Amino acid sequence: MHLLPNGFCCLCFLVKSEALDINYTEDFVDAMTAGCRIEFKVKHFGFTDCSGSCFYESQWGKNRIGYLIYRIIIFGYALAWIIADVVTIPQPYYAIFLTNWSEVAGCLYLFLALCIAIYGVATEGKDLRWFHKVVWLVFEAVISGALITDILFWGLLSSRLSSQALAHQFNIHEHVVAYLLLLIDLFINKIPLRFLHFPYTAGYGLTYAIFTLILHGAGVRSAVYPPLDWANSPGIAVLYSLVASLIAMPVAHILHWGFYHLRAFIARSCDVEDSPLEDRSVENIEMGGETNNAFE
Image 1 (cartoon, helix red, strand yellow):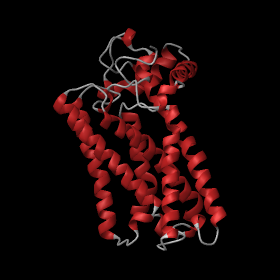
Image 2: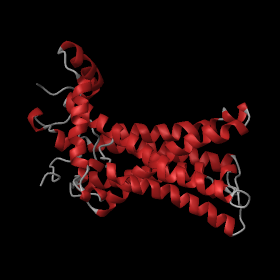
Image 3: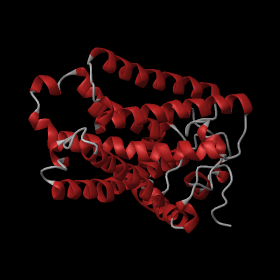
Image 4: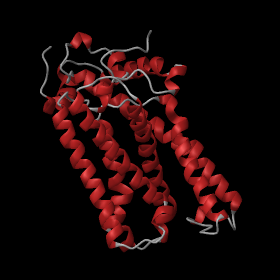
């Protein structure tokens, strides 16, 4: 089978299943099964079995310059919205709200990913170093945090706002578009997600809950949000904090882990990388590297 142009990847994926009568649902389940065998190793609580090139290249090609341009555009877009928000709407307590935490953390990830993409173009290196692991951790935490932030907002707080406030461009960006940017990035980048990294996403949620408790103790604000009223309803605040951090955040991480495997499966099925098809093993693609050390 010859290599397909990157632009025809999705079309290829759809046509194959009909023209060649291939059951992609069954193939995807088989790929997920193989991925699970890889994932559940103690060492995958850490950040291993990944090439540094995964942070310089897209899942859909090895053009580092093109990937760098993408990184510049998406970071510039995210940063512009934050600047416009801060300048346009004065917010004395900007730093205490989870929405702003989520948006700034997402922009921080995009900035770090841009810096590493620049490093990749300058050095052409492939070794996995400590700063790759930092970006890896931040990405997994912020994408789950963004999803849960949006779910909590639309599920618990949106009814308290007017339709005009809900339709405001900054609200739509903060509670819809900011997460979609990270989700799109998940399907474009080549960073692997590990199932066993779910404790780190829970840690992100607990960090914010502890932060609100510190605000209460310091006399700054006892109820950043109505469900987190440490002065009048500490039991409810603890319950919401634990459910959001220890249940919702890990579930969001597992969902994104599934999206990562879907991305890898489509890439493998479409054979979009510049390597022979026989080298496009489940292990290699699922592990996000050119060589796979997970089976040693």
